[in-house]
Image (tube, rainbow, N blue to C red; front, side):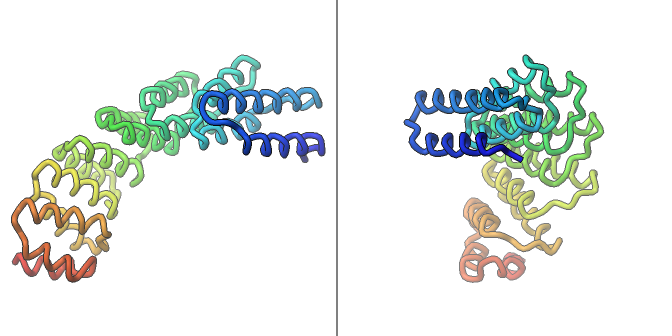
Length: 263
């Protein structure tokens, strides 16, 4: 249990945080707050543990303060508190939020070289960092690393890669990722199809996008508003105005009917 002294200190820190100025001054004050909290723990004879640091690093990451997360991790190493897979995952999660893909992958390599066993959560957040930074090649490489390291990718892994390809119009790679997903005995979901269809549509492969839409319906998946938006764009490119009109009038439930229109 936290002592009354520590609880009082934490409440004071939260009140101070609400009055923090913007920009660098706020970052400086946050660093001071974290430093004082750790110092007060030590003054009370409580040495911060891995769990303590993980909690603070996670909070920094959620607040997009990745530099402070890195500082805390380096402090852990300096004072002999061993980081674990949760530490690195929390750090990479913060890097993902600010589109720092290169740093995220660097820390993933550090984790691997230190002998920690990488898990699917760490891999997924690393792929997501690549996706948000529009680093589609590195997203594919990271997916390959998962498979080489005997960490089976899941639907989230493949969807993050599919989304990364969407921003760069890599429609052929997107189809290969979809095929690889099936070979892994995973069922693509609506998010998978939406990203792959959007990649094809933006690459002016509207006929491929519509073929994937047909496949989505045959598999019994329910189209979302995003799906219909992609299909409408594909119809516009292909001058298939009758399908677009049918979708506009029927909405998500009109998918099968729209196929009948084109037939």
